[in-house]
Image 1 (cartoon, rainbow, N blue to C red):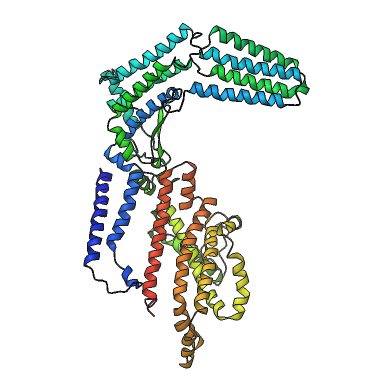
Image 2: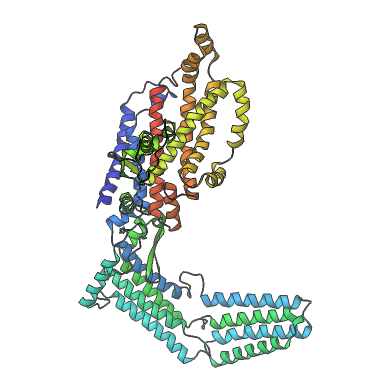
Length: 636
C-alpha cells in the first residue's frame, strides 16, 4: 500500500513540478546575463523532479510497482513459467518457435558431419586403401539407417498408436484446461495447499534474518495459478512418455546392430599404427548413436501432435488474460522463470532490489539484536567516561610523577599511593558515569575516514605551504611526495595492512597517505599562486612574515585547500571500501564484501546508498564551510 501511494506521489510530483517550472520560466524576469552563477541558484522544484524520477524508475525496474498493485502476479507467473518449461521440450521438436522440425535439423547436421568424415578419409595419406573402403562403407551404412526411420511404410503400428495416445492426452488436457473447475480440488486439499502457501511466505516478503534470500513463492495461491500448475504437472508426464518412444522398427534395429558389430570388430583388429582409422570409425559410431537416440519419425507422423501442442499453447495464453499484460508492462527487462519446482526473478528485478525489501533489510541491520554479523549498522553503547579519559590521556603521565609505584608488603597487600592513583586515572581503571558512544559498521567507517582526513590536513597543509614558500622544502620533499602519489592506493593497501595489521591503525594510515598527498599539492598550489602585489603591499605596510602568512598567503590558499579537502574526502571513501574489502571485520566495505559472496543484492545496494549519503554529508559540510570562510571567492 505504501509503495502504491508513493508511486502516485512521485508521478504527480514530477508532473506538477514540470508544469510549475514552465510557468516560472514565462513569468520570472532574470536580469543576470548568461554565464552569471546567479542564474544557477534556486530551482528546488527541479530537485524534486530529478529525485522523484530516480525513485520512480527504481520502483518500476525493481518490480516493486508490480508487487504493490498486483501482489499475486509473481506467484501466478511462476505457474505460467512451469507451463512454459513443460512445453519447451515438446515445442522444441516442431517448427513452432524453431524454423524447422528438430528431426529435420538433426538429419541435416549429422549428414553433413558424415560427409566431412568421408572427405577427410579420402584425403588422408595415413589410411591404406582397404581401410578407406571399410570406413566409407560404414559411412554409407549410417546414412542408409536414416530412411529406415523416416519411411512411413516402415513405421510400426505400435509406435503410431503411442504417438496418437500422446496426442489424445494433450487434446484431453486442453479440454480440461478450458474448464472452469479444472482441476477438481477438494476443500481439504485447498485448505492444505493454502496452509503450505502461507508458510512459504509472500513475494518479496523480507525475512527476520539478513542471510535469508527472497524467493518467489512456488505453491499456487490462486485458482488460476492452481490451474497452470496442474496442467504443467500433466504436461511433464506427457513429455516424459513421449521421449521414451523410439521409432526403432525391426529393419532399423537390425541395421544398427550390424553396423555396431562391424565397427567394433574392425576397431579390435587394427593395430596401434592405424589409430587414425580407428578414430574415424569411432566418430562414425558416435554419429550413428546420436541418430539412434534422436526422436526421428516420418515427416507427417507428428502433424496431429504438433497441432495439439499449438492448440494447448493458445489455450494457456488465453487463460492468462490480463496477467500477460501485467507481465509485459510491469515486469520490464525480464519475467518470472521456472526451474523445476522453484521460481526465480530473471531480469532487472533480480539484481535491482525492491525499495520496500531494501528498507526492511536496512531496518533489520539497524537493529542491535540482528545487525550484520551481530554488529548493527549504527547504534550506541553506554561507556564509562573513565574509558574515554584513558583513551585520551597518555600513560606516560603517571611515569613522570615523582616517587615509585607501590610494592606489596609481607602480608601480600598492595596499598595504592599517589603515583598508582594517577596511573589508574590515565589508564581509565576507575568507575565514573556512563555516556552513550556511537558504534556499528557506519560509525567505524566514518571514524576511519575522518581520522585519516584530519591527520592528512594537519600534516599536509603546513607542509604544502612550506613547500610553496621555501626552496629547500620544495626540493627535499617534492621527490618523496611525487614518488608515492601516482601509485594507486590499492597498491599500498596490502603492504600497509600487512605491516600495521587489519585493525583501525592500518586503515587510518592508508587513508592518511591518500589525503596527505592531495592536501600537500593543494596547499602548495595555493601558496605559490598568491598574487605578488598583495605580498608587496603587506611588506610596505610593515607586516611580519607570520602576519603575511596569516593574513595574505593562507586566505589566498584557502580555495585550493578546501577544494583539495573535497577531493581527498571522495578518494578516502573509495580507498576505505577497498581496504575493508581486503581485510576487516567491521565497516561498510566489509558488509558489502560479505553480501557479495552470498548474492545479497539488498545489502549491497544498502551499502552503496550509505556510502553515497555519507559522502554527500561530508561534501555538503565542506561546501558550507567554503561559503562561510571564503564568501568572496568568484566575486573578485
